[in-house]
Length: 282
Picture: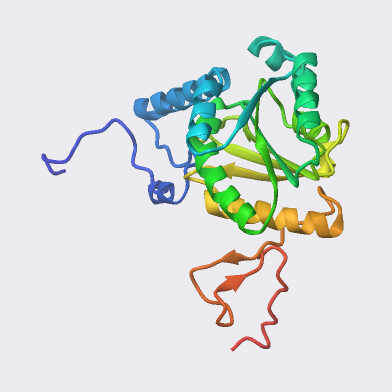
């Protein structure tokens, strides 16, 4: 053994190279019959990050100010969950607006009749951290594409202590053709800041998840802002054409690839593509 080699209590793991391919906790090694100390500490740190993300207060004043700097109006509402404890214990309360917020939205809708194509809702959900980090860069990409295509957008509706279904009430009260909610997803041990998008055509109170389309894991290490916006615009176009959303509306959006397909540089969702016939392969 070389005297200059570092001495470690951890046993060499032949699967160590696999860790370069995934953030999953694999090939962690061992020290005796236990995990190495640094691995155990890293797990505890990730767990603490997830817990902190769930309990982090929604900085809606800061988000509203940033939106105003970009020339975007916002409206702050609150769900029927009065505080974080109620929100976590009573998921049903997070799915509806409280009475004052519902009336505030009715008054706004009456003052600005005509409705909009897309109502945009932002809620803290289970990770305000995700909303703080990813809302503005995603909206910048999405709104640029939406306005280019001629879609009309609502002000950004901020909902404190909100869950996914609260967007249906917002969309219905605004008279919107469609609604999308940007919400912090349940934190994982490798992703405490994952943003989810839930899209509904013809929103109204009482719809189930079967009527919604989900675009998940929007963050720097997951689905890019540009790709998430591209998929949302595809869902909007197809929803209006077919007048539905949810399980009957599949994501078949074409995506840009690094390699050209038949000289077009585009390919459809690989899960929906027709399998190649090996007899015809060159």
